[in-house]
Image (cartoon, rainbow, N blue to C red; front, side, top):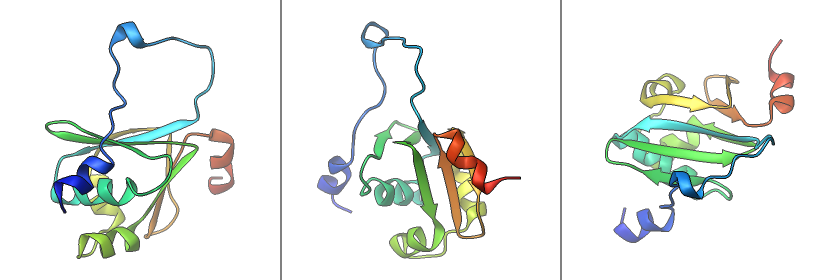
Length: 123
């Protein structure tokens, strides 16, 4: 990975308090904070190629944020990483998340910002 590739998806979701406006609305945003690791960087770089996804690099963590939903496909991430990525490894690298996380199967983890859309996957 070149430095230019990393900078192409490098954004920052964090704002100073003076720049934050509080509204009584639902954002439908979701995201995951990952411990900085080889696997987390590969996940972030791969997801950063998708429209509407913001990647924020911090010294010891990486944030992946989106609106609506974020779909993490382990086979696609494995191909990008060059070795197997499992849903279990994904979860180990995840420090925290917001939105509803649903593990659809061994290959797919989805984070939902829109709670109504999540209901079709749970009982």
